[in-house]
Length: 393
Image 1 (cartoon, helix red, strand yellow):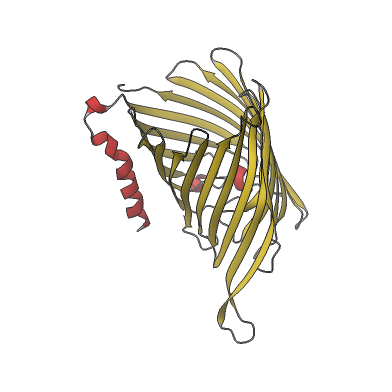
Image 2: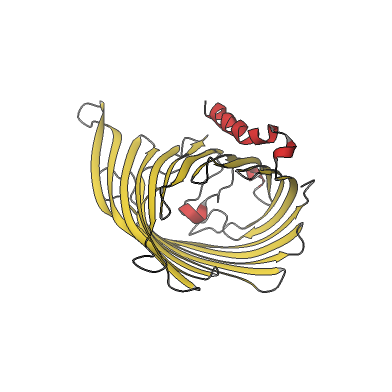
């Protein structure tokens, strides 16, 4: 059923290609191939035994783009062949398909949707976002998004969006994960009151399902985004969240299954500042869930990014991040989590031509687990070469 739903979404994204070519303002077919070489000095992110390895990834891909005056649509189909020098049992060929579509129904109203399908085996997938390392287990991921935005007036806009994320594992040691989110964003130009300022309100409901537990998080924030001058801007969104948790458990007294519930509340929000398009600093706090684990966590995060073009062909980018993750403070927390996570990643890009690009990067990551009083870290060096050539435009 999940695969049929995805294929239907995929066909809807492919539909624009069935129209006559005369209707297309821009139509591209872009085949590409990416060759990537990594050295990882702690493949399993162990605090005791460090297992290093060289990893080669070869990724042929085909991208289709079809843009008209009212429609932007794209599909990308890619295969990732992942080969390990020592841990050859981790070899895999992973499909990765995605598509996006945006349609202007009128000058004031737009609809947008996207879908994605991926199957992979990498032990370090999503590590930068989750701090959680997987074993050699196949995972299938589905992603959907559907929404629309509407200009209510010359100074007010509204957006409604639904998104779904689902991860399904072949191994019983990992928890299947589903999240569904409905959000509504209302923004209004406040320049008549405060120059170069926009006010906004965001309301959301997110439901997480993992390992016999169901968590529903309600959140609401109000905030503002302001451009101080031509170079500096900032934003602040702050509000409250209320979280309900339901877990299926077994009675100690009679061995019968029953549902146990709990709730909690707290602050949520984010704030940040940017300089031109080259420097950005963001702080955030809220509730999230991690694929493969059970239960939800409270995450406080700080991230900074600096990027700059040095010459016509050379770009540099550097990202630093710090997470503090704690399990939800209710009696249903299935796993006690108290972790600190730091990462640092500088990159250099060489855009030799429109068809050939080279990327090199270094990645340092460290996790401190207060519950087990352990530290683990790794160094990862990466070199990636991309070649693409549009067949026609």
